[in-house]
Image (spheres, rainbow, N blue to C red):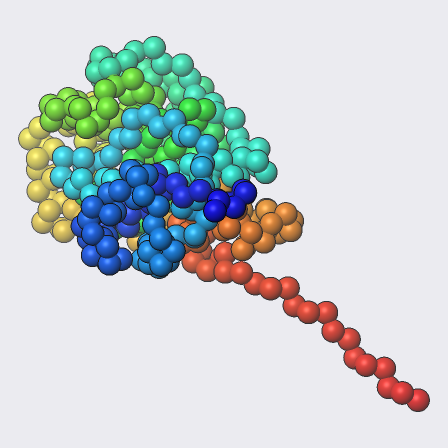
Length: 379
């Protein structure tokens, strides 16, 4: 007998949670003690898991029970541009893509309480793979003018992105083959920056690279459809945009008074980008030739600066703050408590904290201290 208003199992949520946890259908079936066919039938909506099976699902996937019964607002998700796509596994990309759906659920929930900054990006008319170096340089200058930053160095690109309406989330990639990535969405784009990025300077470039995809590649074919040559083109375009945005050609060229590595270390403090990115910019702007570029690259390798450059461990990494502050405001103003936030979002606590750059344990439920007073002594 069906109970009125009884929550209905949603097979979409089961598949999302399984993929986020990086489990194949067979692996998941073995873990919860059912057949592979049974899991497929659950995810297709042909059968509803029995109570004991549902408990096993919840225990294994560690998602709130309510998640599996939620009919979230349908999300429009455009192209998702993964860095290092050529070597990333299908499983890792599926896990990250489905994690972006959790980001969408969090964003939609918080939007009911928070007025986020309006999206503020210039119009771009070119589409597909038509961007050349000159038009990319022009686009970077157009954006700098649109945002009113002239030819000054960008000290914190994450701040700029959030200030201008792009939703920036933090993710634990857990796989060096999947780095920062972005996603075209209805209303405003999402950007995901890897928490494993241990350099503020590299994060600067990541932000610029993903912004390049957002501005230039909205109408490019789905990334999985692109062949290797086409993928290399869009990645090269995004790299060129990041370079042009972070190091405007004329202003940057004037500061390169020497091409010694020591000088680039000093310039790193000013332009807030890696030495590797500056050397590439010098090559692109014909400040140095291929021979000099190769020589400098060899010096970098000899000094073991390929993975970790000077100053990388000195400057703090720029973190997104908009989502973090949104949740803090809701809690501090007693609009919701930690438990209500988790239950109403129906997203695991660990993912809310990760995506919103909250410290682990921030959403641990804390009951209010009971009010007590000393008993009056009887006369």
